[in-house]
Image 1 (cartoon, rainbow, N blue to C red):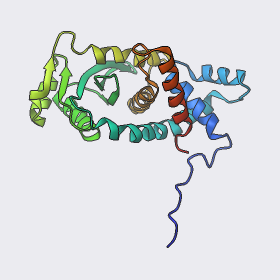
Image 2 (cartoon, one colour):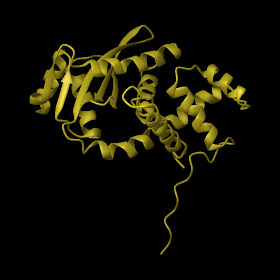
Image 3 (tube, rainbow, N blue to C red):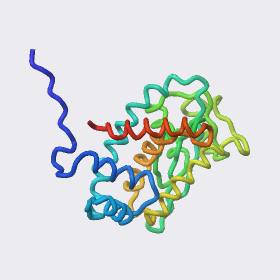
Image 4 (cartoon, one colour):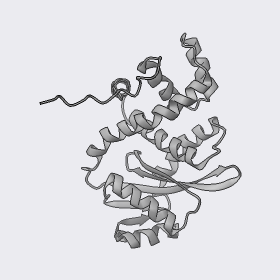
Length: 238
């Protein structure tokens, strides 16, 4: 019986090592650095790259790494009991035109879904929630703000009994916007809707991978989790 073929390596057409490519993508996506900041920091390590190479690598490998991270984490998250989601939308300006980034976060700060639309009406909320439910399963509680689009969409999906609305109940997702806003400023905003969608999805998965909740644990536990996350990152797409 013939042996199954091993999947081709995504790094096979690149002269640089996979370790350098993973490092470049991690630095650019995880930290609020510009393309030229990453180029300068790598130069201090003796790695000579152009900032356009950084742009090409994160566009090429960022979605691949994000998909690999999601595959590893999705199966374990579906089994949570009393799983609670927090939904919210944030304004993002693209070429002077207002767009909306819808985000779903669970009770531990894990970013579950990011979705970009031009409106925030019922149809946009419905598309966002269908995508989130299809990819992540169904939660026990869905916390939202007072936007009526959520209630209309949840009524159509038949899960309006799971909705909770409170004055400060949605602080979990409100606080999660801060990391994205910080990264947006470093990138000098976005110029295309599809670029925003790509980066928001990749950034969410990379954030989930390295999020160790350091404010809730002691120093030794944090160092152990950080080392484990880095070791797993170095094995992505291996």
